[in-house]
Image (cartoon, rainbow, N blue to C red; front, side, top):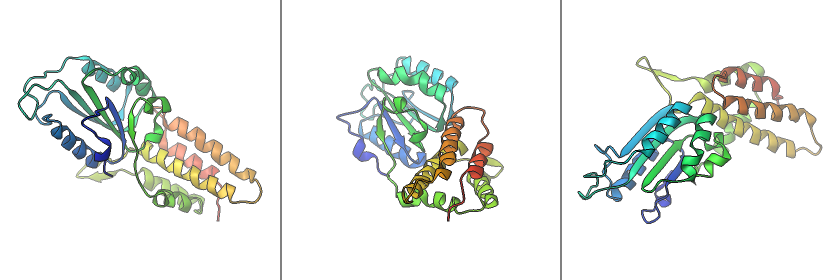
Length: 248
């Protein structure tokens, strides 16, 4: 995904919300900043915060850092003073308490302070939170997105449980857990795709099938619980596997 078309040096927004893969997006942001004459290495006014889950304490720290004055001198590529403070934040999930804590800060931007928030799935965020940003969504093939969900509804219960285990599995490399996308973010994205597939199946039927109702209700409940800290992702996702009817 290319985000360059959304980044305009003549119309530099105070806060961008970018949905997609962190590694690809950060490199484009750094290139954009360099084109603005902002040095991206060895610059105390350019902060890169990378977390699996952005919590309330992280929100408090961000507000504190954003409120401090920049170092300003000697941080531009041209050797001139740069007054801009830049925060690049990449996280797999953003807890509700942290979102609510930052609403006012993003609603009332501080001059020369700019934020880039990168998250794999923006559907997990509050609409009021998203509204504070210039939102750059992921451009992807819908068919590819819903492929796993279509397979899931045709699986037996045991195969669904196995599918969930694989979905939530983290890759272990050299005794370090490497997670490119948190289990909660993966689960929320899958639930959105599953809901889409079920709705498509429902409207394709000539009469209303009430057997779908518990599935939609359970997906709604699980989606809400997944956004709460301390909930068991595995247990919640397995409850969906139990409720959704097997559809051929």
